[in-house]
Amino acid sequence: MALTHKELRLEVTRNVNPFRSLSRHRITRFLNLAQDQIVEMAQWRELERLAEFTSGFEDDPERDQLINLDSFLPSSDRLDKLVSLHVTTDGQQRRLVFVPALALDRRWDAIPFAGGGEGADLTAVAPTHFALRYHTVQLRPIPNQALNYAIRYRILPTALAAAGDTSDLKEKDELIITMASRSIMMAVSGEEAQELRRDLTIEMNRHVKQAKKQNNRQPGMDIPSSSDRGAGRGEYWKDPFVRSMHPYDSFH
Image 1 (cartoon, rainbow, N blue to C red):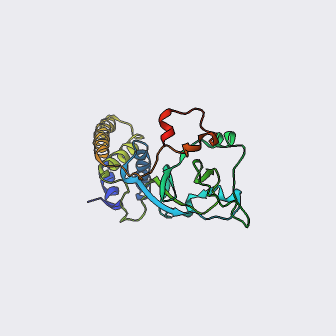
Image 2: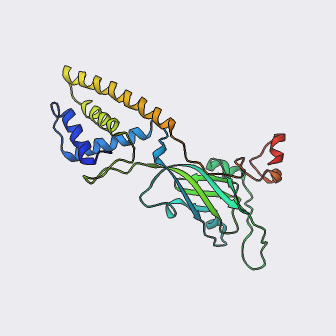
Image 3: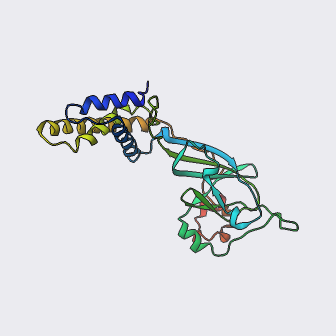
């Protein structure tokens, strides 16, 4: 059973109390710092999320090329990284190809756009590539209709605040306690403090190794896709990101 914020705080207090006396608020800051540091150590499965949504369509290329993810994701989710983006067209789901924003601007000079107004070409246009600008997705080509999307993303753990809060990092309470205690002890001098830091470092490394091993055993979230090879390769000559073709691609 996961420890509450209050229980985590008490454990850290027991570790460092002989050397430092800190307020509850300062210990909470070290606990949240430990969470942020742990996030950088691996791609933790418990922080992965899936979401599906339908984009709007305004018949305006400046607006229809953009998807603000904050408008579709739960407000409690702090987006850390977008892992994959899929679009559904003709009943089939396809993974969009990620490209850096500068590359998207540089290589896609002429923006194909078929508006949905009266007398417009009603041929469906669906994006094949995307760039990410903070929490906003930029699509190419620009869609000319509302489309269904599915995204896989990773969140940042919610900061501990209330006494009953538990960490979004599952089965890592001991690691959080050890890392927070070690960070506090870094500012303490003396032979005994140095010995405690050494013990905490050994313990931290052991918990990290164990957590990563457990993480690798967990199945990752994935989104089934009709094709994960990106753009519609049947008309590869229209794709500004395709420089050459492998014979295998012509069948996809």
